[in-house]
Image (cartoon, rainbow, N blue to C red; front, side, top):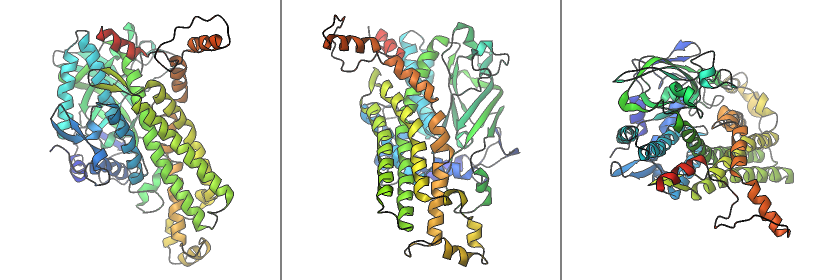
Length: 505
């Protein structure tokens, strides 16, 4: 069996010899023990434990036709709409165990994206990238590796294309091609969980033209590679993790993002999937974006569950759980959470079979899912803070609670209903603060998988306004140029669907 335990994963990343990882300006040698990164490692660990825990085992495993055995679902290639729905369900369930982003989804979505794109390339006669990808996929599945997906470039001046940038490394680029591989320089920004991974799957961040061919690059590389530097970014309340407490900083599970610098890094040719083939970048970005946007309906709904539960518990602690306005707020939070989840499930079960054994999420529903996620977490957080009270932002620290001179007073004055202690209240207040106002639920919900503007562009592009007009004209008794089809929705096909149809001819 190729499914690793969480402990085996942790052991595998404890020793690094080549990559440079920095936190607050200081180099970190062991990410599994450093207080800033250990909570992130523990979130990753939960994805491995999920394949063994009884309550998640069924969702956490999948059958690989490449190895002819079970693997961890986080390295699985989706083979049905039910597979895609299982992804969303697993992400929601895991959020209940971590209360944080578990950081493995971007690598998973990158694998599935490359699976489709390399098939499209092979159908056009470019078989080498497909052969390389399949061998790499087998390697990942057999070794149950933790992957980072590295897509977002630093981008420099946003109105300029990669080749137009005054800083030629504003987008990751190929600087040299040899018979053995390629050399790349540049950086990828906001890369989720990267310091706790074993491999990086690197993708282009945008559609490109022939003048940008040096930037049209996709490859996989071990995280522990010479020339790679990872600068871990700051997060809200992140210094609390350095306090080694057990309440204030949510120290057991957390996530991180990093700036990944490629300083003339060599990539062997057997790990290169795009190197100059700019014409595939638009399709690649479109496929990846939809995959990643669909998943948000699961993990953000799961974090919503955590916040709803904490809010309901706090309402009970202070004796207001039966107040009509509190019940109304909790009901609204439930509605917002289930709406995000429903959209993610719809994107899964209305999936598109884009090539043989290739199931892509429904692109319209995936973009709608992410747009809901860009809006609703802020509303859920606002309602949670309303219920919890101002103490979410002003509560004493756990160190005050543990101070013998203060403990008796804090226990007396922060207690509400007698069935609960002040410590019970403080723990829930901190949970709401850390989850609802953390990067994973607030900032990532807006900017992860593309900004809200990106989703609006996509679903306005997909919706056929002309067809909707003709439908309305016909119903109104006006002359209409309407050709009815079996398709119930007035949607256009995506570029990727058009590509797939061309290959089926």
